[in-house]
Length: 348
Image (cartoon, rainbow, N blue to C red; front, side):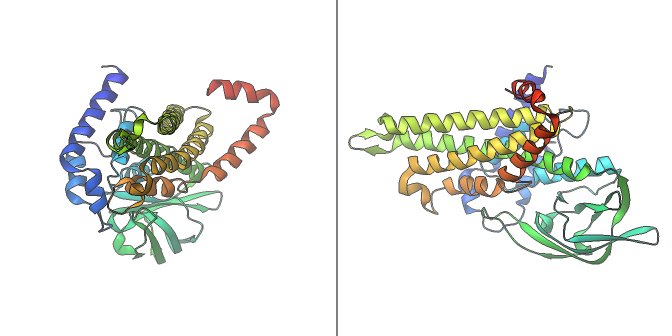
């Protein structure tokens, strides 16, 4: 079976599952800010959680899982669980089964060696889905490397929080907590790789949410009648939809390129490009989608906001456009002028 056939079969499986268990209307009604257990268990039973970690479908083949679930605003910690288990695999940790998350901004945490273990003190803010995670994986700068391990929710104090879209973004407070399976790893690139991979997967989610917004805009403009004809018969609306479709295509291409290059020499650079381009597309695309819908798109009752609020929130997670654009510029500057065109043409 070819990679394209595997990807197509996975996408079809995700779409069938979502058609039975979730919709934008369900996302609009989701107010509990807790994990929808029936939907989560449906994904677990279908083997769609953690794809790309093992020898089965690659991450590139599994991107539809993240893209399609984002297109209907399914509130699942799929990206967080992937990152946590990917980090655990690199560090040799054994996590319990269930949803997991990772602390990717550990500036507020300090690690001290106590006996044969590692003790964590401080707090980490805006940790995705900490309240629902069976394991909270840490990657904290320590000495000339990193301290890694995981925490159970019972080990720490969790203060619930949320982002603009209502997704759980919690504060995790540690008062001298011993890391489970704590160990130290050498090197200074691990935290950057974690952020880059998270940025790339968020880019894929933004591409999916943009695609969902485009679908809604096309459908609405074909149904709404003004001055005796549907909106999509007006040239201005046609132009808006064309621009939005272009942003969706660019976001998808950037996210795919980022994932394809993850294992290569320029993997970090490709992830940076993906996050910057998808962030720009999210800003432009959300604005166009709301323009096409007019006042209707700004109402709580209409589900467009469950997509656009996620786009606005995800832009800032795992580094925003400014962070990655600056980082990318610094790395390209270090390579010198002669290396710029080969790099640009290689990703075009």
